[in-house]
Length: 314
Ligand SMILES: NC(=O)c1ccc[n+]([C@@H]2O[C@H](COP(=O)([O-])OP(=O)(O)OC[C@H]3O[C@@H](n4cnc5c(N)ncnc54)[C@H](O)[C@@H]3O)[C@@H](O)[C@H]2O)c1
Image: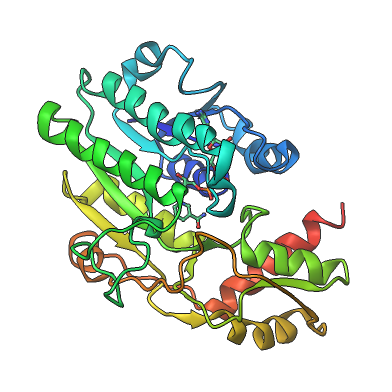
C-alpha cells in the first residue's frame, strides 16, 4: 500500500512517515521547505527517513508539482502541508497562508477526485473553534476562528468535505490540539521555553498565563492518524486532543522540575489571535478510532526537553 504524506519534513508529518514505514507502507513525502523556520531542523526530521528504501522524498510546492503523476499509485493521502502559526498570519503574510493552506489543498483535492483513493486524511486544527462557547469543544460546537490562520484551516477543512460530498474524495479531518514532543516547531510555546532554559535565558510568556491548552503528545497524534487510515469514517471530523487541560502558568513548576533549572519569565503582551482556551471532547475519536491518549504531560515534556537540549547544543 502506498501513502502520500504532504509536509513530510515538518514536525508532525515526519513522525507520521516514520510510523507508516514501520508499519510496512511505501511512503512518498512532499515538502517545499517553506522558510517559516530553519531548514536545518526540517532536514534533521527527515534524515533518518531518507535511508529507508520504501521512502521517496520530493522537494517541491504542492501548487507547482505535477500531482497527477505523483498520485498515480497512491492509496492513502495524509495532507499535513500548511503554513502553521497563529501569530504570523496577520497582515501581508496572509497571502502565504492562502497559498499554502487553501490553494494547495484545493489543488490536491482536484487531483484526488479522479483517483481511487482509500482515504484522504487532512490535518486540521483546534484553531477552527476560536472563542468557542463550549468547553470541552465538540465536533458539533460552533466554529468561529479567532485568527487568519484558523480561517484558512477551516476553509481547507470545508474544501475536504465539499470534495467528499460532491466527488467522493474519501476525506476525514483530524482537528489536532496543540501538539508537542520531540521535533516541535520553534514557534511553539514548549519549544521556546526549553530553548530559553537550555540557553539560560528568560522564558517569553504572552498574556497573564491563565490561558489553558489541551496539549497532545506527538505519539498520540500519530496513533490517531494511523487509526484513521484503518477505522476513520469517511466524511467525518475528529477532535484529537490529549484529554487534559492545563493553565499555561502551571507548566512552569513542571519545567523547573524536569530541567532542574530556575525559570525566569519575560512577560509579553497578549498576542492577537491567541485563543483563551482549548479543550477537546475526544469521545467521538474514542468511539470510532479507539483513540486513547497514552502519554502524560510530564513524560512527554521530558522527551521534548531531551530533544531540544540536543538540538541547541549542536
Ligand atoms: N503542531 C500543532 O500543534 C498543530 C495543531 C493543529 C494543527 N496542526 C496542523 O498539522 C499540520 C502539520 O503541522 P506541523 O506543526 O508539523 O507544521 P510544520 O510547519 O512543521 O510542517 C508543515 C510542513 O509543510 C510544508 N509546506 C507548507 N506549505 C507547503 C506547500 N505548499 N507545499 C509543500 N510543502 C509545504 C512546510 O515546509 C513544513 O515542513 C499542519 O497542517 C498544521 O496546520 C498542527
